[in-house]
Image 1: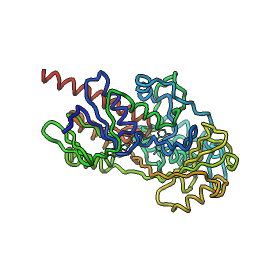
Image 2: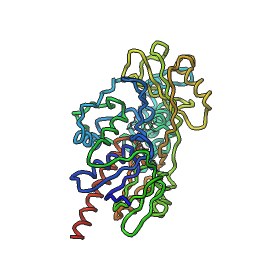
Image 3: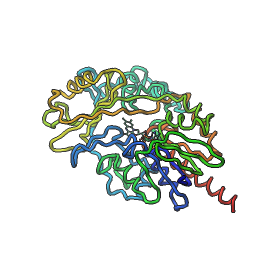
Image 4: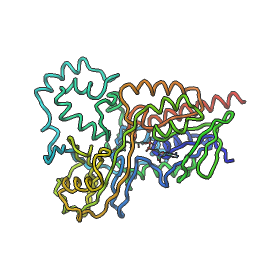
Length: 405
Ligand SMILES: Cc1cc2nc3c(=O)[nH]c(=O)nc-3n(C[C@H](O)[C@H](O)[C@H](O)COP(=O)(O)OP(=O)(O)OC[C@H]3O[C@@H](n4cnc5c(N)ncnc54)[C@H](O)[C@@H]3O)c2cc1C
C-alpha cells in the first residue's frame, strides 16, 4: 500500500494551493488526487485553437489574491499573467442593453446612503439586507440583485454580505485584473507542475477510512495510507467522503446547499455579432445569470461567449435560441459550442455559523478542509483558506514530530 504524509483530494485551485503551501521546506511527501484528467476544477479553459480560448468557469483573477500570487511567484514567476482589457458589463433587460448607471435611482440612493452607512453592518447580514439598506430596496432589486446573481452564478439575495468584496491588500507587481497566458486553467497547471508534490489525475476518490492514527484513501484502482488528509472538493463531495472517518463533520457539511449552473460557451466569427465589445452581460429576469465574453482579450477574427444559465429553465434548443437572440446571430454562425455543468456552494447567512462550528470541530484533528465554502467563492478566497489550512497542518506536524523526538 502506498504511503504519503499528506493526501489531498481535489486538484482545483484550493487543493493545489494547499499542496504548494504544505510543500514548503519539503518536509512532507504529498499527493494530490484529482478525478478529472485535467487539474483546475472551476478554472476550466476550453482551448479552441492556438491563441484562442474561452473560459467555461472562472474568468478573472485580481491582484488582491495575494496568497495565490505568492504561490505563483515563488514557484513559477508572474511573467505569464496577462492583463485583461478594461471593459464594462451591461444589463440585458428583455431586448434592452443598459449601463449600470441607467438602472440606478439617484434620489433613492441619496435618501438611503447616509443612514445606511451609519447603521448597516455586513456581519450577520445578507446581501439584500446590507445593500438594500445602503442603496434602497428598489435600487437593490433593479441594480444589485441581478448583478450579485451574475457574480455568484446563483440567486444571491440571501448570501452572507461579509463574504463578498472584502477589502484586501493588493500585490502591485501584478495587473489589477488578469488571466493566464493559456487561460485561467493554465494558472492551476503551473502550480501543479511543482516538483515538490505529486499530482495524480483521473483518480476519483471513492472512500476514506480512519485506520488507527492514519487515513486509508481508496480510488478506483488504488488504496493509499496517509497521516494527514485534506479534502479540497466541493462541499457536498467532502461531506460524502467524510461519512465514515468523521461522521459528525459530514452531517453538518451535508446541510450546506449547492447551486447548479448550466454553462454553454459559443465561438462566433467576430463580424457576425451585433453586440458591442463588453466584459459581459447581466441577465435581468432572464434564463441566464450572466454572459461572460472574452472581449477583454481581443482576437482579430473570433469572439467567445459563455452563457451561465439558471438550472432546469431551458432545454438545449431553448438555450441555443436565447444565445442566438442575444448575440443577434443564426445557429449557422456558431463555429463551435461546448457545454459544462458547473456547481458552487449556495450559503446563506445562517451557514456562516455552521462553517465556524465545522472549523472548530477540525481544529485539533489531522483532517484538513479547504474549498470555496468557508469565507467566499472567489479564487482568492480559496487560496486564503488553503494557506490557513497549510499553516495549521505544518504546525500540527511540527508538534507531532517534537512529541515523537
Ligand atoms: C461559472 C463560474 C464563474 C466563476 N468566476 C470566477 C471569477 O471570475 N473569479 C473568481 O475569483 N472566482 C470565480 N469563480 C469561483 C471560483 O472559480 C471557484 O470557487 C474556485 O475555483 C473553486 O475552487 P476549488 O478548488 O475550491 O473547487 P473546484 O474548482 O470545484 O475543485 C474541486 C476539484 O475536486 C475534484 N474532485 C471532486 N470530487 C473528487 C473525488 N471524489 N476525487 C478526486 N477529485 C475530486 C474536482 O474534479 C475538482 O477538480 C467562478 C465559479 C464558477 C462556477
